[in-house]
Image 1 (cartoon, rainbow, N blue to C red):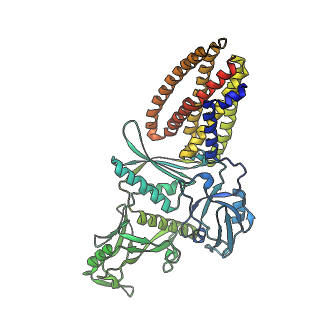
Image 2: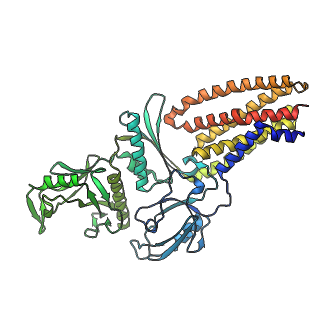
Image 3: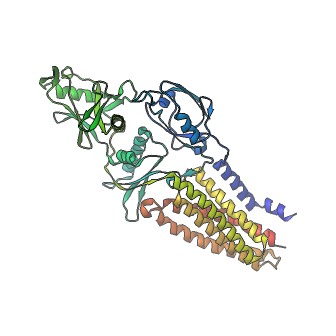
Length: 529
């Protein structure tokens, strides 16, 4: 039997090849993919009305919905998309074709006649693999928060799910919310959001979101369970047509309003509180003597007159209003609608179980990520070539260097495949872990090569087995030392080094269990006469 056939049919090599195939299926590489991928859809926007929905954070990159054409014009990249958007006018029909469906939307007019309202799509370049890029590579915002008090596991789980829900309701996708900690026992929550602005993320997360409405210092309803419905459609939410926008000094101020529905219990509380209140007249209108005052995190945000017809009545449908200011009317409208959106989000999701303090925020530009990937690939290629040259100079045998190159590539592919399967984000820390894992693999392969070459002149199978056993004794000792060293790093730095630790552990485990045994068998077959 030829040596090539022996290698291919060896059970250790078969396992390594099977792992490579499974990894490639998981990675699903497709460098020829066209279009732009939908990241998020704004509520009450044109695309939302057309039926397009935001991407689920748990979906794999290659399975996400991609825009292929708009009005039969091919959309192959971001430049094509924004070029088409810049030509749109108000009240025009747009047919959007994706890899999953066909949608029809009508653009809405903006503040000026020559402008249109934002159609409500957030897109990004279509991914070519299922490997998820972390914030360091694709850009976004990372926020590290600390609860004001330590939470039990059940309370922490409620907090994480509530935060995830709040961010998703707001319209953000590609959201990672997870518990973290450090070696001192402090609890943290780490939030990573691709493509989001730092200001809006901080606004959503810094507030506990404790919403309360009072009349005469008595609580009428609270955000969350007391509210059964919050309107976010254009017919019952938006700039208040009665108040509109106006100048206040040097600033423009616009008022928003939206409808909500109260639970029967909250409506009964309102009736009980208002039944004995006197009626007053102001500007020829009759109101109750006490106003409805709205509080967010114990700070008053607005106060509303209560019509006299609501006295003692259990009414479930009411209007909530507020305002936003800006140096121009357009800016005031934008800020007003943003404030409305945040308030709606809080009313729907309710308050977080504990107040959170922002410890650290990072905003990463996607430009740096692209440059880093290019540089990392270039340096990685140089490193592999350098290692192979050193191995050739050291052993002067292509039979040793070629399997080592094959093993390095195998380990990298399998490791990326595992990352694609478990949905692990590839960031700078994870890339550092990959480098450590592959570097450790090269070291282990050199140990195997040294041990096996000592018995090259002997044909006895006993000698080969003993050499391999000695090599793997050294390898296993180094493996367990590496794993034990990585475990504390999963907690160090408030969990920011977790990617490095996890990737290193997975990488060295793949090497010890799959690729290095295969390398040992290949070298044995090639060198054994």
